[in-house]
Image 1 (cartoon, helix red, strand yellow):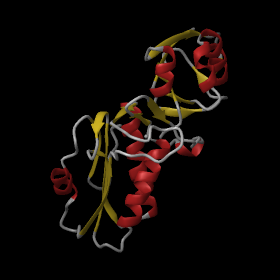
Image 2 (cartoon, rainbow, N blue to C red; image 1 turned 90 degrees about the horizontal axis):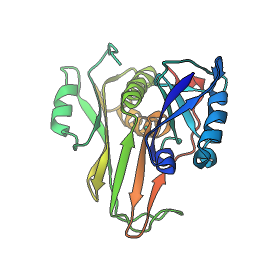
Image 3 (cartoon, helix red, strand yellow; image 1 turned 90 degrees about the vertical axis):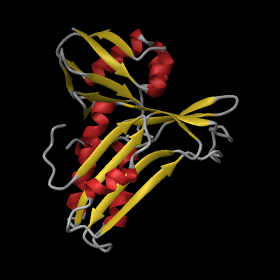
Image 4 (cartoon, rainbow, N blue to C red; image 1 turned 120 degrees about the vertical axis):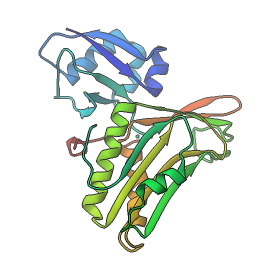
Length: 239
């Protein structure tokens, strides 16, 4: 069977295209698929030991079965549905800066007395090994359908840990984002400040960087570098 595979971030750059096609014999596992990719696209070989695989927008593993018609995506470790939510929510992958006033208004209910948010900005200087010392701008890319699904998962995880949290908003920018512009916006609402909103907002940004398929490219004066994380999802990360 022939499978169409979506590529993101570093993987897309390695082969110069966002989709590849690979033929495997059924029944096939993810490991069979990766072996076939290594043979057909040797430029991807350096990334395959740590690559993440998604099948129909869920994390997949070496023993997972791949079938004809599956939506298959490959991407590096994250640097990122029609659910019925118990509280107000807002999840977005957007080229535009979030409208914070509109988000606050959406999350504010009669029983909400505290809203806490984390706002990520683009900094112009990065003191990290392997990255340009000066950043001109960032370029963000996302696997949008899966990203919003994982944002919803983060909200449910927050409600499990902090039942007092009444609303959750998660916004991730994509495309070019310039110095001092907003990249990420996480907001949690509750009845009182002592009902977990500070902890939930911190959890939201930390978890986003583990399971939401979003990547950034640091663009400097003389080079650009995709930033990859080290988190490897497990079956527990599919909810």
